[in-house]
Image (cartoon, rainbow, N blue to C red; front, side, top):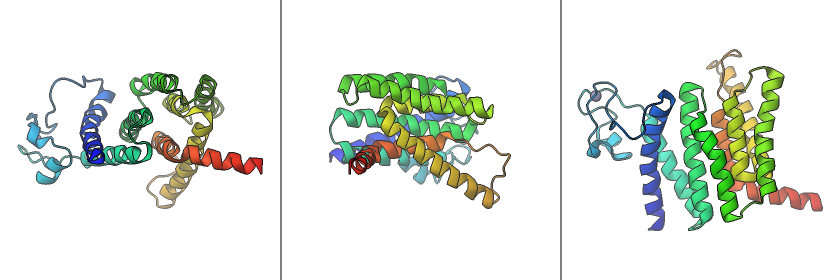
Length: 249
Ligand SMILES: [Zn+2]
């Protein structure tokens, strides 16, 4: 029952994230005006705005003008619902769940925005860094040194890459790295970075091999960092403990 409520809340929040994803890069207000079809401008009624269900019932088309609704909308809702459900199963009714949900929601929005616009908005990462610090101070999950080192490591790695490559990575990646460090602490953030580099590297090679992208096309790194952050949120603690126990042997 509680799991169902959490998943439904995730779906509804995913619906709000779709507004963030559509409007934040264009610096439009998230609160007004109400959602309208970009094709014909018809306002979207509440019954056509029910997560997943409306997209299915409308078969992915605007009720008024039949313009197709991007798959991004149901996908963001489904992914957010699934991630919230997974976080509930992992953390249960704890402060950690709330922190995980905040981080996951931010990572979903960042992924979709970076894929569409090749930017990672400061409006998410800078409050995100503060939220990570606040969460760890409030819950005492990590001590201040782990958090400070996390921010320095997560941001520093990308700062070094930016300086060395003169633009191979954006400042947005650097702030996202710092945000992951603030939420996860340096050890687990390191795991997140490793996952991002491995999955990102393999994906880049695969995309080039398939001819989808060539060497000159920029492939946004934000989605891989977000994936690494989510993986680290769920499995990082276990991996770090396993690694530490191996070192002691
Ligand atoms: Zn329309």
